[in-house]
Image (cartoon, rainbow over all chains, first blue to last red; front, side):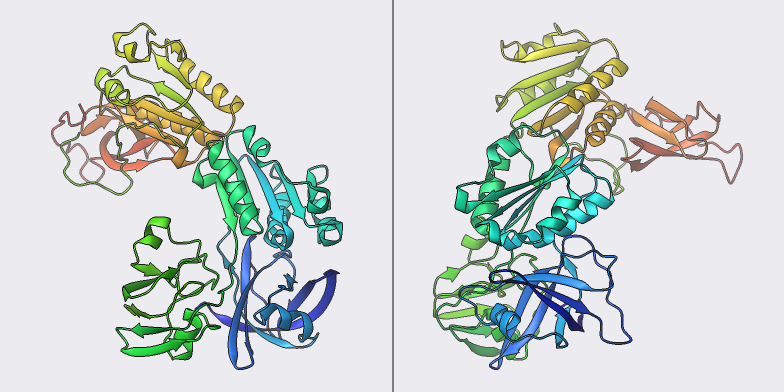
Length: 317
Length: 197
């Protein structure tokens, strides 16, 4: 696991219905580390005795002495976002990871297209700030459900004057990815963050237009969804654990005292990849790290977001 | 390839050209008309629109596989005019292009540089060595560039030092590093052999 630290909540601000911005500062006598555009932190909390780990992109400027995140309250919250919205108060102390960047900026491009969907705007804002500072050629496309959910748009508009485009679902407006990808100069990179459906539509349009993978950048964090209870055997440690239906495999391993490596806890980074010795039931792969071939091989699993449908899973850990 | 049996990490490896089906359009630069390499590439049809820049005559027999109505062939008398045309083409075209270059190493890396200049990435460019293994060499003492060096030791045309042509390759310079061979024992020059035919 990456290094952990304490931060103090210095400000909570409502941005839109169900969306709040949180500002964190270092405890007295300490300093927050600087971060690169695209970084996120993982907030660790224990709610009703259960650990929660939620990744959030840092949307502020690396030059600020504070860190900023924006959190949308998930309609079906497992507790993490509900806790952030309803229980956390200014002055509270939180346990968080140091910044991690799985969505870094490639600086060798000639042009950049930033695409945000909903709360996925947070890393896009940090990239826009960096690109503006470096005087890069970029434009921003931001899609939301309706005008009231258009958060942080003043900052974006100021960073990309004349190159900031909004789309409202309520008005049947959607970015036209086919057109967007169709006529860009060589050396253009696209960065997209938002709901899975939008990311897939965006990346597929890019591939259809002949864009190479190295110019298609996306980030999405997945929450470990609930599923059936199953048994996991850690073969090397000779430990047998029951993974409850509302607990992730990674959380269950950690509760049992095992410390498998992990970083993003959102199925994106690949750190927690575990080798499967055997499994007598079906896999529920939910990560975006393993390839389809790896997923169907039944040889690997990402414990942070994936699980199996009952039965016994034996891991080589 | 060369008589060397070991490889240093920086030394480029050149697999044969293969059409990249993920690309929407294709640009092939032929720096040296190598009949075998072209025949091998043409065993499968190009998966999209293809344009060709060639140094030499467009009527050369090696280009017969490309004699199709929808393939544009532009012919150039010199490397310099070809590279300028390539730079212009890359500057004006859009994402979805794949660049392929075939020929001697110096030209390959000039094509690569033209691609990098417009922000192309490694997975959009393929380079394949053909016709000669003669090396581009950069003198680390005076910064002079030489091309098509076929021997293990060569005299720098800039500073006249005797240089050992190393396997250490710079992608930025598009050349192998040449170091003075007799720096510690002046005048002691080993036998010169042709190792890069």
